[in-house]
Image (cartoon, rainbow, N blue to C red):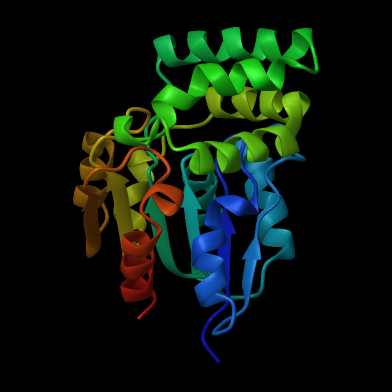
Length: 232
């Protein structure tokens, strides 16, 4: 049987982020989605994921899920058979990014209804400009935000702000690694992916054209092809 696959969602996302992949892959192999809504730090998210994971597994994370995946690699590299880093970064948060996050946290803490306003503010940065009017895609993203809720969103943002610089640990990654990024990703742009791919031995870089930050939902067929190739 193929190795189990652990998927780690991003900020304000649920397992629905990976639904196009899971639909195809789940009949072939065990697939699980990590819980990233119950802990206050990236390290504790990684610890929870490791506690519930098989002894050995393939690991894929998108955005914040990539931060968690890199922490899992630091904590338990021998347990991971292969790694996929999708639309993410190994860098710590910048001062400007942290300031924007604090503003969103204050908004989330002000009212339970803030989830809709937060979605309105984030949506233009999440997807390729040509997908902004895609009502079906937006409904999926908005639905994940509502399922996450303002409290978990605020906690996740705080965890992201405090994340470590994972770049020094990249050269130690020795498993087959996929680094994938949307060419128009405004949140973790291609230069972050190039930096990771150039630092991880035998990493494969995939640049997804006409794609923003949510590659699994914006370009599901192409992303699935890259993931299938990575899985061998």
